[in-house]
Image (cartoon, one colour):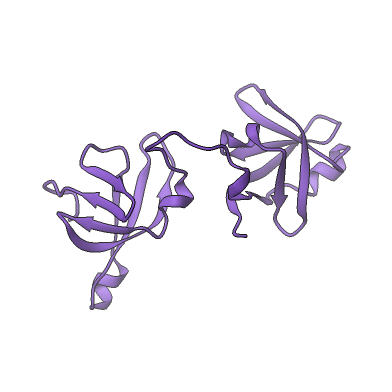
Length: 162
């Protein structure tokens, strides 16, 4: 099964093995996570403290054990993620989808950049090296971006793909 990255472990928190977590809030809905190189760990508790997420994992009982985990990537199994409403997607579901501009094949989504305005990172198709190395950033929530079962359709507006 392909796991999806949902965040990273930050610094330790407190003396009882708390771990600051930088990533998706979906961690509140999970019972377990996969730690990079270490395997699965059950989640004992997830707390939000001072606008930060703090995880307490089985087997991490003190500050020293927590400090050893700093920087590790955190993954979840897709089947463990909560079901989304119709028309909503997890970012990993968009990566690899074909992109069409004005109905014509254009490229594919290679990443989604999370931020105040989420961006699709699109790698263009083309026969030249220049075309193959070019990437475009398109706002995901823009009214001219339509996600369908067979791909992502973009209505070109002036300056968008230049």
